[in-house]
Amino acid sequence: MNEVTAAIEAFVDTWAESPDGNKQGFLRLHGVLAGMGDAVVLSFHPRPGVTSSLRAAVPGHGRSLFVMVDVIEDQPRWLSVCFFADMITDPEERGAFVPGGLQGEDAVCFDLDACTEEALAYVMLRLEEACRAAGGR
Image 1 (cartoon, rainbow, N blue to C red):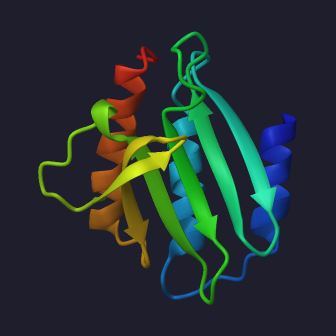
Image 2: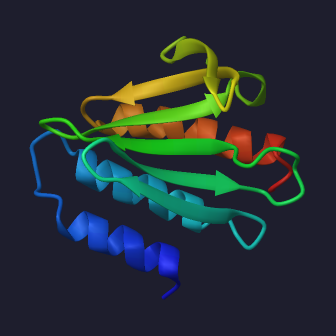
């Protein structure tokens, strides 16, 4: 087990299950990102009491990430999944356009108060899209 996976497991171990499914949603998104192959590098940046960020990057792409999955420390915790606006489509306009919202560049963020199967499926399609745009696969 690498240090990122160990840090994520330690973080998740402190997260109580709740009816919103956000813990399981976070684990599923991590699983998808971890399964994208060796071209994708994951990092985890906890800021206790504020957010914990899972970030995925394709080295050599020119940007330090292609997605940021934030766990927002609230009651209950919820997820904000952000992409650079020019790396994905949002055909159903479910995301919020955030000018300068991701490392100073325009972003599209999907706030998941509850990780339903439908919401996760939609965001997972965006993960695949962003990874391809970054040259990951």
